[in-house]
Image 1 (cartoon, rainbow, N blue to C red):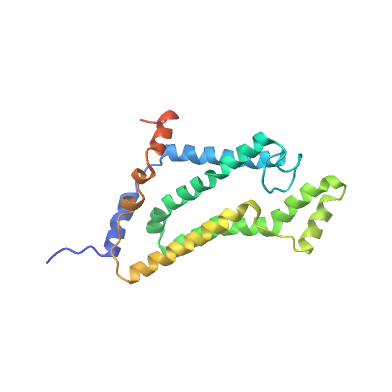
Image 2 (cartoon, rainbow, N blue to C red; image 1 turned 90 degrees about the vertical axis):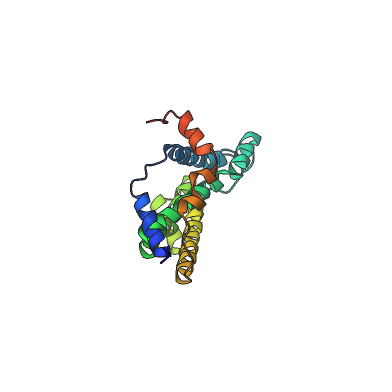
Amino acid sequence: MAYKNTPNMVCMHMKSEMTHVSRNRGIDVVRVLMTLLVIFHHAAIGYGGSGGWFWREQPNASSSLLVMFNAINQSYFMGVFFLLAGYYTPKSYVRKGTAKFLMDRLLRLGLPLLTFFFILYPFTVAIAQAGQGRPLIKLWWDLIIAGKFGPGPLWFAIALLIFAMCYAIWQTCRRRAGWSAVSVDARFGVDRLGPWPALVHRTTGHAGR
């Protein structure tokens, strides 16, 4: 009788292979560098760069240098974050299963999003406007009463939640349809990302440790 790989059997094999996978320090370095770049990017907006932000020391787009800095960043840095999130999503889904995967995303993305949306967004606006002489706490409360809420920079958390739910729905439909599972590494392996994670890994002095 011929051996048949069912989706569940392949997933079990993939889970066993992922148990002792070590971290890719090169990718960790990329994530740290991109996070720092996000901080510098938004700080630049307040001092003459281009973009929307809560507070400005200089008028919007008043510094050509910072405008160029923001424009170059916008062309790639959030794309890198989404690329990394997509790279780790299949492995996380296989390891945790649908329910735990979605619950984990809701806790890690949904709770920070709700906290910022209803509490920290109006508080940040209040801080930016407190320099006009109004009491900070009263201004904050007035903004909450007025319903001045928003995702602010956590718009990306909304996008990641949508992508995660779409991925879980797609995997569930594929499993129920009886489609054979394909190795995560075959679809989303480091080789598909090109040489840059390994290059960063080497240049930061972590290779071989």
